[in-house]
Length: 69
Length: 246
Image 1 (tube, rainbow over the protein chains, first blue to last red):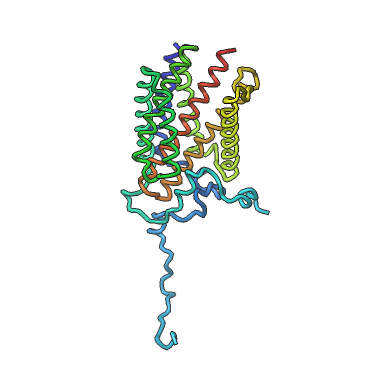
Image 2 (tube, one colour):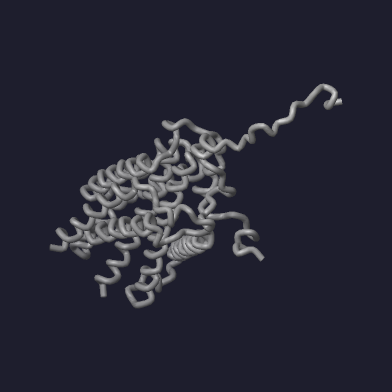
């Protein structure tokens, strides 16, 4: 009986791990200011870089040769 | 004054296995990036190898000691020498640690029949319940949480090391191995700390996938989870042995 109960617990737990582990954590968990900063300063991920470019259009100035001097 | 004054004083410490590997600033293509699926699948591979090793250790208990020594060396090599090669060292680590666990479990089973399956069930039960608590946001790991768990883990490691060295001189720290109330309380505390280390592993994997770290970090995340699970299993086994011996 002991083996059956703990065997079922093991299989059920592994099933939960295999399914729940692949799901992204809730927003409550991810969108926090006090998250652990693994390896130091947090930087935006690749997807954010690709979708939300930081380049400000129209504000670049043309540098003439005279201005360089 | 900063909320994290200890961190500001002593630097942003924490597990050395984790912090150094987040400093990579390269951007990788979709197929070269760490994912949650990949980390979970690789953990499943390591668990399967650990069970295979445990089967060998169960049938040939003499493999326990070589398995423990080689497994420990491989763990240190993976953490401090070649995290990028975790894909080749972590499977061997899992297999050798499995051999050690198989041998240890046979020894425990001879004294207290049925204790092995109880320890396995409780280990995976804790894994699943803490994963649920983490994913749903019930447990929120913060910098202070990490500092607390890291300090407690280092304290336990130091206590075990001192006890191990003292055992060569015929003495030791008796209360941590006794089956009295204090010994059981200490074991419970160690089980709690080992279990909370799982939360740090989940957060490490989650953030690694979010940041798009290189693919080999899937193996590294799976390896760190395996190290914690092996420790948790041994501590639960010790706790159950103390309880059964009363």
